[in-house]
Length: 449
Image (cartoon, rainbow, N blue to C red; front, side, top):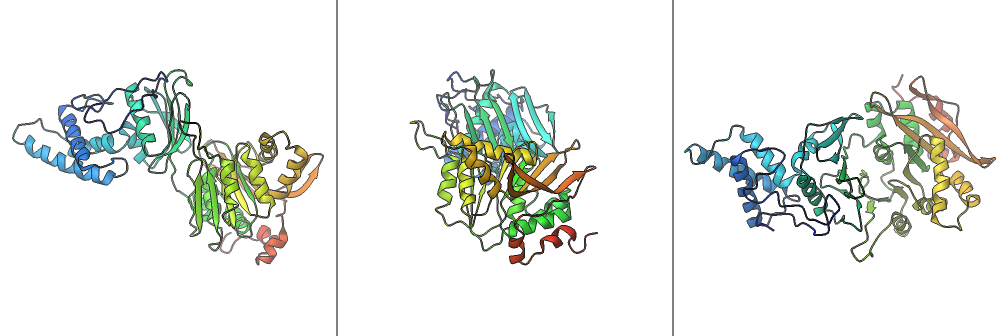
């Protein structure tokens, strides 16, 4: 390994899955990158890395210190260029930004990570980098090398405690800025590693924010605000990128500040404005095959932490059974699930617990789901890329012909979310909290026409 290498390659990893470590593209004088920036930029890059190494700075954890070093080195270089000793550089700001991205950021992808309009970034192969804006995706002009892809993966996993190798070809991790990255090793994909970076942009922390964004009507927001406050169990459903996690965060903004909330996720994404909140995430098994912490383990442990409410980022497997058992004990909760409609979300909630073991049958699961889930919110993305609530369905708790009865409280009619004929479940909870269930459904909030 060269003296300038800041990220130690693992010998069991390769973007191709063949065990070969990627070459050192950051060695002094190498000059490889997404574009030839010239000898001047390469020299500045090398000098910055020397200073970073001498001062013992972790670039990914302390980008501000790297920025200070870059500014100093660029300024000194510009002064030397006036004497003709070194070639001049035209745009000092562009060079500083490029060097900083290479040393303390994620190189060619950093500009997309910094762009607030970009929601997601993915790499199918080095020459095909895509981004998504406002629900629509596009192919960028960014062209990487196979070595650059390998280096990006190393940097992304360096601070996460996650790993990827032949024995563990998939991984989920969280970048320092909160973005979620999913990586599939080459060999599982046809040739190159596939990378997805889903940026977590906090655009809504309360239901009122979703109203302002056009994702929810004021009337529906008022009903949901009351439903959360009184402790109804809420299931948020929708497709990929429909805004389920954003909705979960907005709903959590209506939780009374006196409650103690425990959240369980595969990767940290939930952000709650609650003082008494503990967040937990899963953990991969180590190289010895031990130490794995599954989502269902977190749900079980959360019950030992004196919660007033539990939130699960997403249920997609056997952890659904543990969540149902928690909700069945009288503990209020919320979670998200992938589904095509509110009713299909309930069907999936009845199916996933069966994965927990042969001794779990539908005769137990069906009435448990009917008795635990109170409201289902279904979200979708329109042709214009706008994320909207499509329907809000109430679960009555009754079962007819092996199907859970539901009532549509709000539905989409002619493209607009409107009040339907369904009624809210557990009206006594609303009354005890000082709400009028019938008034919530028939009267708009003050000041709303």
